Length: 279
Length: 279
Image 1 (cartoon, rainbow over the protein chains, first blue to last red):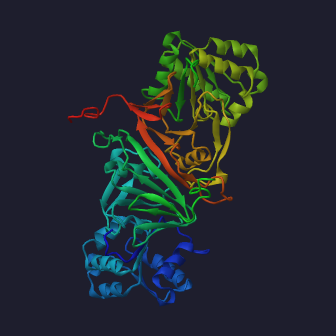
Image 2 (cartoon, one colour):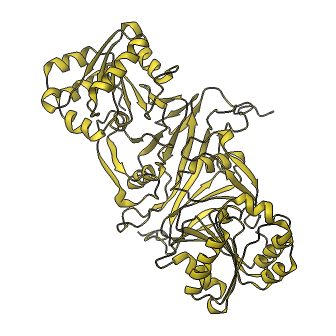
Image 3 (cartoon, chains in turn blue, red):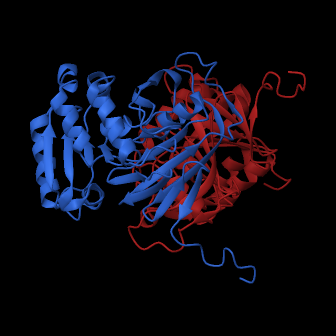
């Protein structure tokens, strides 16, 4: 994480509530500064930038945002435009829509906009992403991989992400698309990586001290590979099934947190009697 | 398990190969005694006993079985019939088809056939079950529960099973139907229970010494709750999401085993250098 980070990440598992209380999106607006916020919506990931952009513009305005700019950065040329960089430099909140994570990295990767995004995060802005916009947060991201199948070596494809979140790999639409197999496969490739699977309408807030806070209606699954005793991932022939032994798993809903440095779950309140020898 | 068990369980995650090499069903025939086998197919679970019975009859004959009897035990009256008990008493292999696990327990539970089945297992027969026939093996079985959703308290229903397998709960069609959430929910209810999730075309053989052997094309997921530090399962209000911390997870394919007593994965061959201090 480094000591320099002052910003916050809001990593959303997709399909966040847009009609009801909008718990997750409200939190984004609040952390962006509410009526004083200056928000950018980047629709790079989606093939329907107009519809998606309009939708988020309307919601963010309804939730009390100050200034909202929707930017359809759909080419590397645009991603290097000074106008865009200046907007990002002034933003208090940046929102990456869903779509295709490879569109985000192939269009933004290595551009002036990407660098501005990183600087915004370091100086204290909130960077939010949903679905594909969530996947790109980490150093290495999942591009595709069969869901609802036993994890097999050749079904998972990874690529470099935007690198705002270190030592972790994000997966989204997690329980809804049965993706634990592919996230386990990622952890098997390098058990140092923390696998974080975020359900729909659920999000993690990554605070500057590397403490995660879980919000939304479903759960977040944490796969910790540091105690893994064995995996066959380096020896697999195509189509052979993965083995991985001794992964530590946590499933946590709203009200819980996670310490990414100590890799331990956090609870809002101590459990009754936990520190009470007379209990 | 007790010391008296001399039989073997073959617990199949459903959709086992019936056209190709039939690895799992061949193993059933082989362990039943091949051409000397005396096999009973119980179609109690299914609403299509004729079609299912004929299918297994033909496959088992093709795979070299000796005597095969398909019995549509569809009522408790039939399940108490002496004729059935005598057949089970002579069987070397008994196969429970898929369908609805509650049909099996409501029709067989507490009958003479059930008792005969248990005796057959103790004396050394192999008891196989696929899908619903797999779920009923344990003391407590999963009846229903939402798949592909975050585990929530009220979505899981359990009931007493046939009790051939102790200290574990089986789930089937595991990766294919995204069922880790509901199996985690079971483990949360009593972390002493070992959760065993079996993929399609995959099976565990439970040998008399409580060592499991994995066969088939996919994987088996083991959820060990003994190190669980916290779960909110006793405090949940309806619709609230489950929390469970510190589950130990193993995913194992063919060629691996699992020691149910020590709760540790087993490999066919030691890993290079594992017991070699000079490595």
